[in-house]
Length: 157
Length: 157
DNA sequence: AGTTATTAGCTATAATTCATAACTATTATT
DNA sequence: AATAATAGTTATGAATTATAGCTAATAACT
Image 1 (cartoon, rainbow over the protein chains, first blue to last red):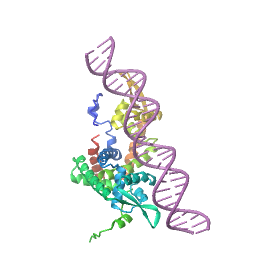
Image 2: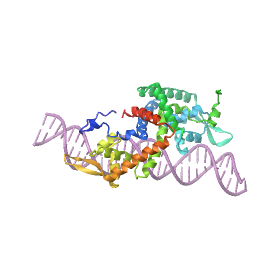
Image 3: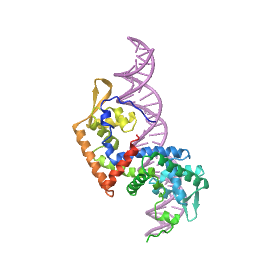
Image 4: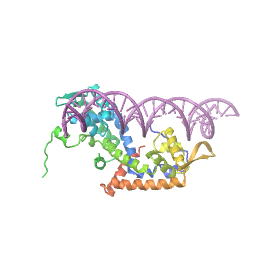
């Protein structure tokens, strides 16, 4: 994956990266950092048969039994319609179940299975470990500070 | 005195966030933060007739006259094929020009026009101002720290 | 030299992700 | 009872990103 491209132009070594002034923009650099973490997370989750979206939904369901698909959509900032296939996948994998709720027959009460709980726990642990590895050049305090700062921004949605 | 009352999951679902345990994952929270900043940036750049990708390419071209499309692709971490339409858009907007280079007739030497330079400067300034606004609840030091931490992660690509 | 390999830009297209609209069935509101 | 609103679903569109292959030009190699 890592390209060791031979730099043919003259002044590249002097100027460094071609996007150096973009790197001063928080949004730009954050996007690049996100891409790296997302690719890594996807790789980790693949070993559990999960994608990032299915994993996220699984966590919400485990943490909040009897949650509905609409609530998941709102929590994960996605469209209701796009939750359907995600929940389908989790159900077909035997990780969650759609349960009818007698008081409202429009919605499903989603609940994780025992297997779903186990997968969730293992995946969360694996992700945390992987983040430790990939962020090894940040101290524990720096990682905490980073998360706090990101949390402030992300708290707007 | 601090009350440490234990809340049931039902109550948490009613009051708190449903994705609270996901928010402890840096990659997840960073993704959410990125979405906010990206949407904001897209809105700002729209006023200049730019999209995020065209803006990014424009900045690289302004900073590095006679850069090639392949170099832009490498710098912005995108596929060569996807640069074509981006450069087309910039050229048709009169912001850059494709210039032939006598020593290598395969590639173009991309150079910004005067108008391109002006748009770039205005867009960069507008973006910076907008980031100040949207990140107003972070101190200058916090924003600097955030950028530094993100830069460490993003430096891997 | 001549052959081969590599590179730059380009086109077309596939795969993904994400958003929108409309439908059915239920439930809530008036 | 009539109407509106909601949950899940389906189909589809738009936008982004990735992949494969092509031509022309250059580089590398024997």
